[in-house]
Image 1 (cartoon, one colour):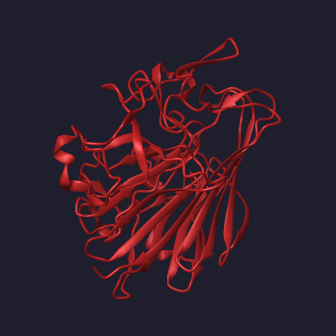
Image 2: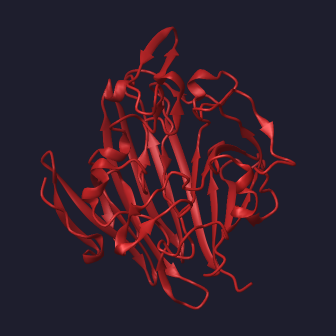
Length: 353
């Protein structure tokens, strides 16, 4: 593979190398001061640049200096992850009496689709307009990372309004029923990607329950209320206010409250303490993984940044982890003739308090 150029040198579109004969490029979506850079390596978000309360522009997502660095990555910076995001306990499941054994990549479990999940494939660019949208496609084949059936997948990133963008993830099985749970794994720091930790960020989660996990972060099958626990963010508070009471930091699936909406549910609001930036998130999925970058240890990032513990937060809207092994969780099995669609909308504003 050709050595890839630093991200900071690229704008609008640039081809930066080849992987197994497939061209890797960086693509920019822009409207005014709001811009997003993406790559077809993993259908990945590389940067989101927008103004703070004083009009100063900053990049608010964590990433690497070069796309080259994603080859040995375990952080999943900005990746699309799948075919099944999060964890599958024991790296195995059954559908209609057929047993599937996957290749574990997280102890004895499967994480984010396997050793070469969707974040490690070169996606095709189906459509691109730099002031509007980009659509990536991937033909996930029968047996890819052990999953059954051919599964054409598409991911579209679209500018919707001023400082507002959407992500639409779609899939349609061709010939076998299969689990599908695709997620976007951006790490956010609203004060700027190199500004330090996110412990002073305030967050509100529109979720009154969580799915507890065991020591390997596999759900127990329970669904329990957050009231009176360090996991309660129904009222906005600083992320760091009770994190010492959560061993290892936050890394848990929240059950998004049902608001009665047929389409989108409000998932979260996040405030940057220094920048005055506010991020709001909506989705059509039943869960959201709230992760506080607990495993970041001296990671060399873009622009000379070094990411340490809690340098960014993830809000991964999703189906519940390990749903394939918990009949009481919403099913992720999609059969031929059915379609999967996961949509997210982000809105960014500023506040002065």
